Length: 427
Image 1: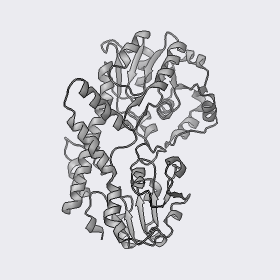
Image 2: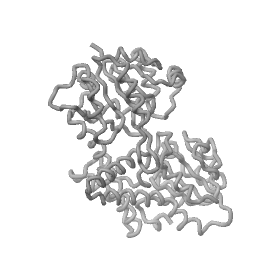
Image 3: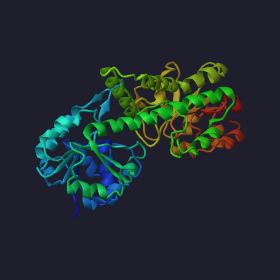
Image 4: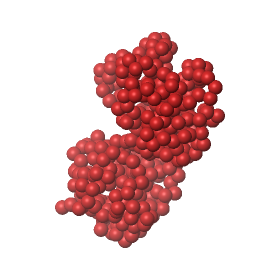
């Protein structure tokens, strides 16, 4: 028997989760009350950028339907309420869309259907709402921008919040989860809600520690790329640890979880100093590229330098600029004009007025005295350093993420500035 799985809310979370279900053979209904958006999706016009997303929908279109009519939810065996939860600059969540779509689900899904909140909520949100129907659950999502379809198709585990975790999951819901061949971890609602935050807190701890130690490397002539392999071979840290230096946390989701923990800690007079320190560390790290440019590059440039920037998105393979380190860097120099390129993000979407957009990354380099590669897109990894050097007037490349091949760059006369390496090493 093939279950019909409904997804409500066609933003990043709903679309990629639906793709994962399709890839595992489920029959999927994608619902959104926005009829214009549904029509775009029917035509294969997706409002987000994710690898494999369009291809997965196209390959499984025989088991896929779209609708803006809430009455169509009645056919679903499992209904996921899955809109993205927007956050403000302080990490506070706006639940208005989730609450609106949840009401649509409660009214229009059949009594036999299993209702699952997939959007992230704070501890204590789900239990009072679960009293409205018999089969009501909260499932933790662990998607990653740029890898969302892969994560939805091949999850590491399912974390399921339940009113009573000792009771068996409904047959239709269980059959669907078993399609993914991964552990299923039922737990009480509050534990599941906090598990999502706990995962991100541990990730932030790794990121913050890595970034701090990488900066120490830059000042004591150590090389972080030599240290990281030793850490990965420690079983207590592991092969998949976040050990690549970066420019702070961004995107909104991690920031929201840190804010949530601080609020909970304040309510119960718990010590959340370590979380506050991680937020401060992230803010400091966002300024790293700007400090590199201001302290080591700008003093050596003449009047009105020509500056190039590759990358505006907060990370590769996404259109999101939420808390983007690239934009933070550009905002630090409002009087400078930057020649910019990004494969997805348009300059006009940033709200900055000192950007000159180029469709080709190499055109953005014409006459540049300095290049900053602030988003590690694959298209930049593939760029030949000798061509970069031929387009630029200067020779300095601020390359925080080590996008360019160091040996080839040096052979082309480029001077790289990379996180975790002494600045003097590339002089």
